[in-house]
Amino acid sequence: MSTEPTSDWWAGIDTEDAEALLARSLEQFGNRMAIASSFSLEDAVVIDLAMKVRPDVRIFALDTGRLNPETYDCAEKLRWRYNVEMEWYFPEREAVEQLERTKGLFSFRDSIDNRKECCRIRKVDPLNRALKDLDAWVTGLRREQSVTREKLATIERDEGHGGIWKINPIASWTVDQLWDYTRREGLPYNSLYDRGYASIGCAPCTRAIEPGEDLRAGRWWWENPEHKECGLHVNMKQWSPSI
Ligand code: SF4
Image (cartoon, rainbow, N blue to C red; front, side):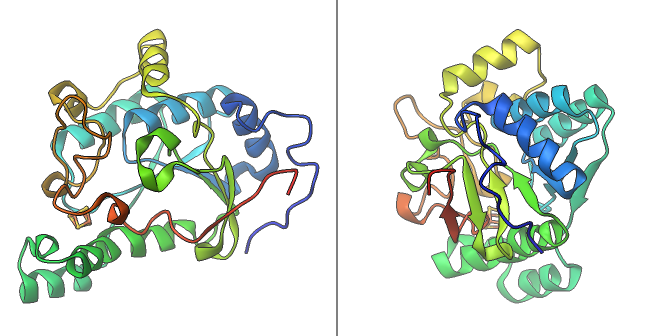
């Protein structure tokens, strides 16, 4: 059940100001809000910004069973740094067993439908469980990342999850801003970036990118750019104090 909007929740703040938006959101939702992390550069920055406001902020993550070892290393470094419990969610065992027995281990390469089926089982269904009792969730999504995110709002109603709030505090940040912040604060980061990765996802569906390629070109590189979402960030309604 989502908390109904009130027009003054974000009154007087610049909703493009990541720190102010996070502070106001944490004040409003407390532990009914959690940060979703895939242990990307973006997620580490959002976690650090939020920890400065509220050290007991909740963080959840989806263990798809196909993540890179570097991603687990980064998750542990962040857990140690902030002494925080990572709320991991796994796919349903029966669904993964059925998928792998009937279609093999790489069915996601055969068609978009098969890829979406795998993402549904390993990501979307676990996300639904993670969000079930929340009023708001926070992401590290950015407009610069892809054509599917160019119009991303900082505050959305997540109609696919009961109308709960979705906060994207660093929507306007550039990749240079992310690295500046990461280096200045000495944050741990996923070592896949040192190998040319620009986006963090499942190991068999993510590769390093070439200079000049789109930041999400390494995700499902065999698909057209407009299909490159896994189903975690769909059915959103933009919201702003002026709407
Ligand atoms: S990103 Fe690839 S391996 Fe991961 S859930 Fe989606 S299709 Fe499956």
